Every structure is written in structure tokens, then in C-alpha cells.
Image 1 (cartoon, rainbow, N blue to C red):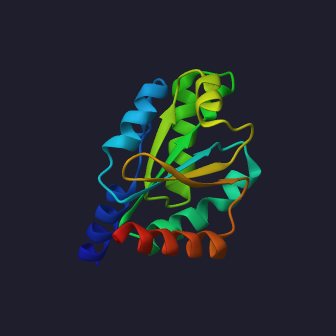
Image 2: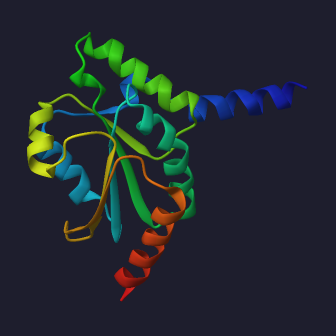
Length: 164
């Protein structure tokens, strides 16, 4: 009985994400740097927020995609800080959201000016998902909630073409 409890406690501790562990991105340059520094042939960047119903709905599919395509770097960037409130309180809410949904792919918390992102990435609403190659070239994007099957098919195809 004691061994089971220790194992479960260790597992929960290993999968718990605190607000302090949710990496902060303070500006557009930080976002570009994170995407560029990832050593994967394909990088998927999902911009989302906890207050966005389609973002919340697609999160389980994003988690499944991260597990199905381990060679693809999937990262989420929360834009929750755009809503007024205390930054740490909102950051803790985002960490709880990810923990409650057992999201394991890398996520960040953007605290910069949202207009920087909307201007650079040329988007208006959330969620939006971008796919880049290893050189930072945008391969495709999905505006709105992604469809698991069609996005998985697209990633599979891109993965094959990037191996060449």
C-alpha cells in the first residue's frame, strides 16, 4: 500500500505545473527566439487562451497530436494576460488549466503587447495554429479550431516532405 501511494505521489508531482514553471515570453522577439531555437524539423505554434471556447475545445486534440508526432515540436502560447487582472493570478489560472487537462506539450505565457503578435503573425482571432519548417518558413496555418483528423493528415504529409 505504501509503495503505491509513493508512486502515485511521485507521478502527480512530476506532472504538476506551477505558475512559476510556465515560461514567460515578454515580447515578439522572445516568441521568435523560442520557435527558432527548437531543434525539430517541424514546429507547430498554437496561440490560445483559457477564455476562448474553441481553444479549450481543441486542447485535447493538440495533446493527442503531440503524442502522435513526437518529432514535431508543438508549443502553445497563452494570450490570457491580454485580459485585465493581476498577471500572477492569471498565470496561475493558465497553469491550473494545463494541469487539469494533463497538457504535457510545452506552453508559454505571453505578457507582451498582443498587438505585436497580431501584426507580426497577421491574425485576428483565437485560436490560430502555425506550422513552420526548421528554417522558420510558414508552411501552413489553421485559423479557428483545428480538426484533429485533417490536421494530423497535414502534419503526416509535412513530416514526409521535410525528411527529404
